[in-house]
Length: 246
Image (cartoon, rainbow, N blue to C red; front, side, top):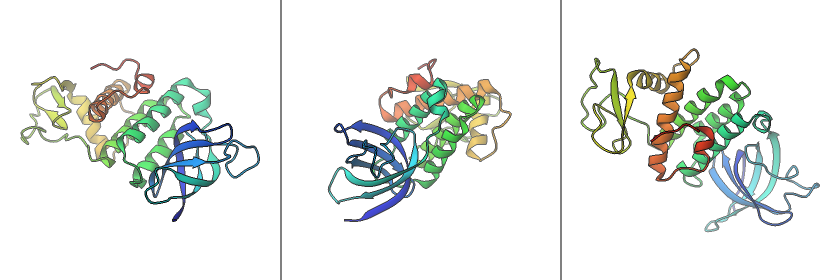
């Protein structure tokens, strides 16, 4: 029975009984672990008074092969991200981030860069002006780590270079990137400025000073793309993007 010890963010939680909880934890080195925390809600115990969604801590768990739930033995709370409890916009953005990670990854599949990106995004939202940028960077990292990074340099359907003179292009969820012109129901028109911003993001260039409206459009494009990949609209997507179209 291997015992794991890792840092984690709680991305889902259910009450199992009056004193116990079942949770999904996104751990840095072991990926998503689903576990049972017996007695987690007792004041005196090994779980810091219980596990809350969008908190970070150190977990110790026993993972038994063939068992759906691990047995959590310790949880040491490290960060509560107070702004997520104080600001509605930050709370809704954080819940969407957790929901997206939960649906785009498979269990026990480690993605340390994505874990670091999630922790960084949750910390960035202390400044309300950075919420959109934090969301955009997290969505991009989710797509990269899950193998769905969009094609931005060439037509995703034909492989041909994109015309430099075109001010408006299209995005195809089926093809997985930018295309020259919309030809199907899963094609959405997209401005070149939006693609340029996503290219900057893909190259690791800083987004500080980017036009807020361009960031907003890029965020919604990736949200719709993720929705198509998942095959359903997440309950939290309208919390984070109340004006989402498509």
